[in-house]
Length: 451
Image (cartoon, rainbow, N blue to C red; front, side):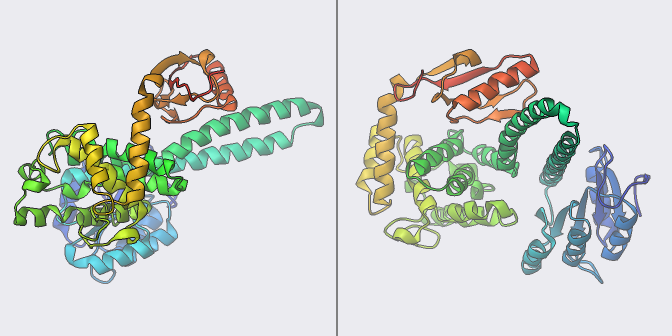
């Protein structure tokens, strides 16, 4: 059955401006609840009461996303989504499952390559956001493929031009290459934003903690800086950054009174409840494949170097290095918020606490690197004030202190990017092509070239 009037389209994926959702469940009351939830969201809705009926419908109708229940007669949701993944791989797949279906859910994740699983009973706003983010990701991927297709077509067209137009071909090719380079920078950032829920989760966690606003962002950025200082690979740095943003996601659902108590003042029962949040945080990210390594770091960021931490009592180098970095950065910020020892420490006192616990709570190497980096940063603060410049004032070696966007909100370069002569020229050419100037915020430091 279907709720919206079908329009002729290819079953490979919807190309209409209105996204199409296929809802598959053998229980009519569940289908009715899903229809009510999405009826006013601007989606075209199709419904089926079994996996077989869903496959027949997909052969006739295009769908951008499929939401299927795990437990259905004849064909489970996992088996149904596995066939959808094989036959219509561009269709986003979401599985609705109960807590008792964990093993089948994991099998569905592996075979059906699902975008996300939602536990029943679901929370309406969470399900709406999940569907919205999944469709946004699909749209970005579709745009990327279209851009690649157009670029290939344009390159083929250029190769067929008459030899007498050789100069024009070279000029056009160079122009396309410059455009592609700028788009490549943008796409890398879009790829880094693949998991749209990362900042959303971080903000939700901090809503229950009255004085912790910005804590996750501070931890993530400082951990990223320290990982770079310790010369970790780019992929490791990225995982540490994501883990920093989401390290407290397991606190969702904990009471405000528990979260606003210092750890040292918690009762035994309260500590047991609080100490579950690292493992709960890892479980919350189980279905998000790109975040699996970040989830592992989240699980272990409260382990101690001497083996007295939680949840697994790992010790020394058995604790992942990224988790050891997060432990130092997280506690440094928590000490200043007053969440760890019952009173707020100043920066010098917090550094002293870290150094006095080297080899016990913390990895000595990580503490040494962080304290040294932090003191150098404080020492240079008067030499590294932010400066606002137009592109004419840019010099190689300057570092962006804020993300750079164009006037329609597209991210061009990220904060912390060190400018080169080539990138500065690309920025100026972008301004000429768009007919609009950009304003950049950079760091002018004594140890950065300005000429």
